Image: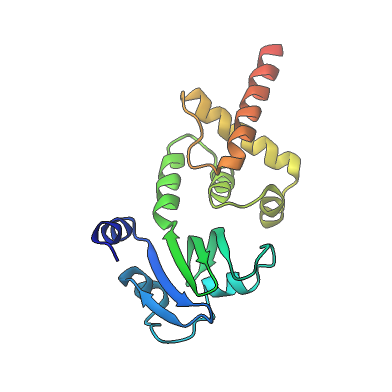
Length: 186
């Protein structure tokens, strides 16, 4: 592998694995060995290959790229990227533990209640509103109230919510705008 590419992957802690189309491991970098164990020469059927085996959403089963965000594999959370061809499957596992720690540290000092912090932490980890409601046994209205409060507290500090998945950022801005409108009407 190119030295520059190798250094970038090591610095980012990204695990890389190359397999034949029948899932026999041809190459693993050191990060991959730490996560998956020594697999070279073996047929791999766990971790990312379980995601791959159960993914029926692709037009061509054995070809193209696939992204699995916030996937729990081998005892940790990763963003998983697979590049597939008729001959090979290349896997990139990007660990999310550092991002989660940074997000938790960021929100810990925003004046959130324990419940607001718990909810924001679940959002950062990619949980959907229905999943959060089920996990915490709360209603959607209660969830919305906690989110409004958390986003409002960030806004009062002059900050936008950070580490929130991109598909939720507009939602956060809309909640903030709605909160501003209702407080100015009072």
